[in-house]
Image (tube, rainbow, N blue to C red; front, top):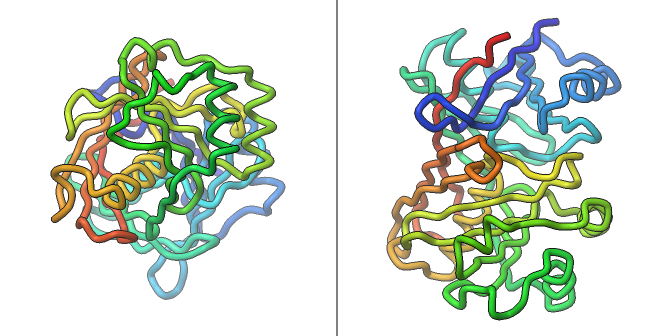
Length: 278
């Protein structure tokens, strides 16, 4: 079985988030998919099996467990499908719904997320996260109160005032992993706004077995939904913004995000992708 290694959301050909991609006529057994993901060691591996109706049945596995949706692996899959079958739109059937990915002619791809939703972060959970990350009220940017964003899975979102505070992100791995498992969180998203349409982001991913994810399409979509719900400047009637991620871990990544401005609507997240050699 061929496992392709693709870096998604690369920035000028560098960095990005590596994903394993397996495209086949049928999925291997669940235990085998988990073994492949664990042996590969990337934060996510995506398995896509063709269906008679022309759609693709898709499942995602981290090294430790199956996950409902992964954005960077979807972009990686789009790049592989585009290479094999040409540019165009591919309909994907996930465990919990349907999405699509569009393969471009330049090797990049655009995913359309599941519907989004967000709410203010519950005070107790907010306080617990801030304590574990060593954050105080003075560290938060009041432009966006802490929220729980969802675009297929849950991502707490905390916007910080200072770039230096974001760069200093650190946390006790085992305690945060236990929290994420208890609350069924996919990442914990910390961000800083350089401009209203440019954000620097770090996503803690202890639940996936790694400290940090260098590029997270699902979290980008969740953030977009939260910004729309908060009536963020420039997004009320639809708009775009850019996410720079992975810079503080030496894997610069670039995500371009587009929203309609309608609360709860799906989000488009675009990025470049490249094969990982060797």
